[in-house]
Amino acid sequence: MDHVEVPQLLGLLAAVLGIAKLLGAAAKWIGQPAVLGELLAGVLLGTSIAGLVNPDSQILHVLAELGVVILLFEIGLETDLRKLLQVGGTSAVVAIVGVALPASRSAADSATATSSPSWLVRRSQPPA
Image (cartoon, rainbow, N blue to C red; front, top):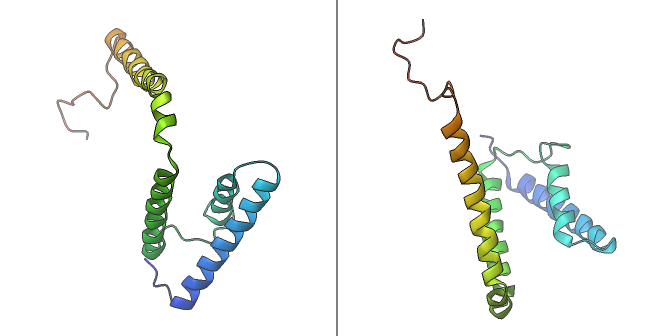
């Protein structure tokens, strides 16, 4: 893990926040949610493209976790419980089917399998 100096961290945060804000505004300008542009900024700055942000940095990991907590808190503040209760039955059915259908398919596939996957087979002798 690399040691990050305070000016370097502040510069990195300013760059990340600035580019995220710019791409968020660009996304809104083309009629998309701002979060789409902000996510795109993360992909561009991360190890996928530019490699500006080191994912192994502990301080950035802590700040990212804090950002997720704040985001979820903000989403919770904007939730309208009346609207949520209006679609509760439909969303419950979708959630149950979304879990039950793949689980039942997986159970059926494993019940009809003729041989066990190699990672499930216990070896009688250790490999040489």
